[in-house]
Image (cartoon, rainbow, N blue to C red; front, side, top):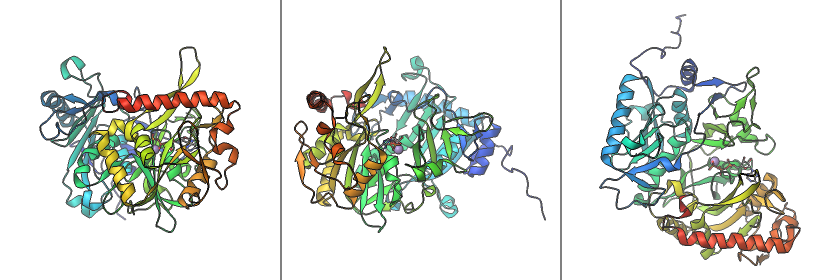
Amino acid sequence: MKAAPSRPELGAGPADRRNLSPAALYEHAIRRDEAVIVSTGALTAETGKHTGRSPRDKFFVKEPTSQDSIWWHPGNQPISVTKFDALLERMEEFCRTHEVFTQDVFACADARHRLQVRVITELAWHSLFARNLFIRPTADELMSFTPDFTVISLPSVKADPARDGTRSETFILVDLGRRIVIIGGTEYAGEIKKSIFTALNYLLPAQGVFPMHCSANLGSGGSDVALFFGLSGTGKTTLSADPSRRLIGDDEHGWSETGVFNFEGGCYAKTIRIRKASEPEIYAATESFGTILENVVYDPRTRVPDYDSEERTENTRAAYPVDLIPNAVLSGTGKHPSNVIFLSADAYGVLPPVARLDEGQIRHYFLSGYTAKVAGTERGVTEPEPIFSTCFASPFLVLPPDRYADMLTERVNRHHSEVWMLNTGWVGGAYGVGQRMSIAHTRAIVRAVVQGRLHDVPTHADPVFGLQIPDHVPDVPTEVLDPRDSWADPDEYDRQAKKLRSMFEKNIHTIGKGGSAAG
Ligand code: ATP
Ligand code: MN
């Protein structure tokens, strides 16, 4: 038997490592001291200073083909062609003189809208991230691959704000004309996938496709599609992985003339305090060979990961191909959605766990893009803080928000999709008094929605927001359905609810004027 050469790609120079397999990328990542293998077989990397995205360091090149379309506001800042070219030149120089990794992948499961994306990275584990998250071409498709868009991610290339016109040493620069994104000064891999999502928010509307920051799944019969919009931590990934339904995708989709399609070929799940019992499919995916864990702490002796530790960040993640979720829809496509669900994790505990939205409310809550987080203050007191991110996607929007809101309302009207708002946050009181809605109860609500079991249930209007709350939902205790009833002190509820309503009103007037819409 002829002996196979051991690890043929290693040291093969020139330093151009194309479309390497997960196994080869593991070896490179470990040889380069970028990452370690943990007991479950996953590859674990630390991202250093940046453990999340850097939205304030993102710029669009001000260039003739896109400058009149871009929604310029403090979250979408311009940078000149000259400044961009100077940084691009330094990135190209880095690629000529260092080992870099290339993945040729696709975005958009619908072949009519497919984008061929070349991702060039300094880090081997970023190359595996790109391979896991985007759509992996077949060997035949690779033969005819020609990039439509190029992403270059080189954390070692840092900007000098005085010379380069950036805000810090970190930069995410998008040139929509030449179709290049350059990323420097950050190792957070999520920038790579969200920069292409940003590009699609510009490219797809011109092709008649509505780009959406949402997850999607379908009923086991293969028919009814549900979409889940929501900001970070509201449950897009958790709720779309549902044992009784089939996952299409966990974060980014398009809605075309024929239905919905995933932009990606993988998922990027939060792992903080993950429990096998409530998220069995995601838990199993985090334990697979090929999966990347970001900033997850592990025991240095046993290499057992500790998902409960937030020592490095709350935002610990697992990045894995979508086919690791049992029953995932491998075509990445589905019909027009029957149900559209807006998720908010309301830390004030005043929004109802479920409400059906009428036409005016659909637009209002979509443009508001609300959730709340729990923020620490100087005195160590934790308090809820509202986040309004228009269209549930402010950092990724390229066109003005009304354009996306128009695409949503036009489609839900035409296809008679029903729209719901779910509070996956607190019930029975604000953070600290009440408790977080259980995943089991939220899943029961989702089940009732997608099975059409809330159609004929009587509803009553809540007095502050005018939301239609179902009187009962199968498998959910009635006490939790009406937040005013679930609070110990109804007067205190009224005060908090009115406070939140006035925050909504104040916010909606700032959208488009560059206010808190930058989220
Ligand atoms: P991102 O855009 O950052 O990926 P996401 O919307 O996908 O965010 P998830 O990854 O689904 O958010 O995170 C939801 C988190 O909240 C998970 O850690 C989940 O365990 C937790 N959680 C607790 N209660 C609920 C609930 N009732 N519904 C959904 N998620 C819940
Ligand atoms: Mn997610």
